[in-house]
Length: 512
Image (cartoon, rainbow, N blue to C red):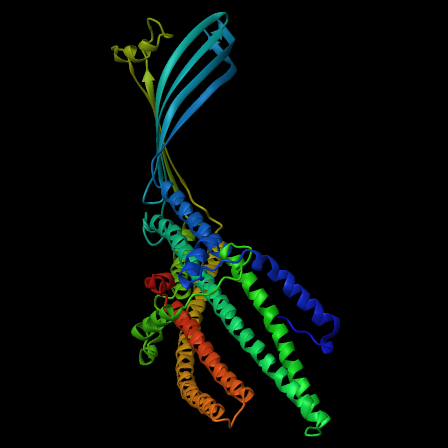
């Protein structure tokens, strides 16, 4: 039941109406199956948009890595030249004439990148042409073999080097690994957010139940106080003070109910549902114990002095370490941009006899090559391209690479320090929470004795039912506080395991 008083005016009634409307479909189709933490984790992994986006980025990085690897494999290409035309003046036995040549050509080319960052190309082509000169037509078919080599030289301290080739592959691999680490961090953050919402929903439901009982008790106290005032046993101020206390509890109830609606809506959204449908929450004590046991077994406060070891598997730390390696290898890749280039080209084709049986016949293109008058026409070329005006560019590039690597190292060291400090803070907070829970255990034992004593007094006629309800609410309040501390210990355990780089689903789902 939602209670509203005049002090809150129209705004209070609007909130109350909104709460009633928001719960109407829930009441119509409620699900009585408890929502367990294991189900929350599994559905978050399947439905959370941020986790799905990070997973797709990792897949994209993997395909980019595969694309880079594909660039190191042989590539076979079909080269077609459907038509070409050439018109020129040529010298004949009777003088000069115009020769017109029509040709088509086809061939295949094999390209192979080299571990030295060069590239080899081998091709076989076949050219068919007809040439008309002064009314005479000549038909030719000529096969041709080509070979070319392109190779950067004099970089990284040697004539040729394999470091750039390996750096390119490793760079793509690092990008994939970092995308995987980013996905792992996003997965841990998504699970942690969902678990925090799970705890919020459970906590708010308990708080609302306690507030409703408190309001009911205060209303009974106010009714009694009204009677006492009529009999002159209480002043108006005392009754008014009790009314103000009751109104404050009602205001807190409104805020808690609205907070519960928001938390339930957000959790339902992450789970891929329209609402929680007033689903009860499962008893998570077993999962809480598993998380705490994992923390106690895996992380000891005295072992955190070696911060680098304690956070070695943290995704952010690992990613920044890979980032340092990536910038260093990128510097190696940049080294090739302004280095000399060696090129070697060979072309060979048949040199047929002067007199051929039928130059247009495909078979003669090969058979005539074995005649006594046949030979080989070949061309060979070697060239070296040496950039001359690159000293300033090289110095600027080297400075950029050095600064980038320095920045990467600073980011890595800062991430390591921040993560280590966070782990220490979490473990210290864990100690405080455990001590607080022990104090609450003592307080709960005391409140239990108060309740029993008050019940005994009621049975003896020395107390009232209202007084018993008061001490029972005190006990319930302390039990709620202890539950909240236990929930904070659970989230603390999740944070510790996350900082350590532990697979959260693997730990928490072991209870299933």
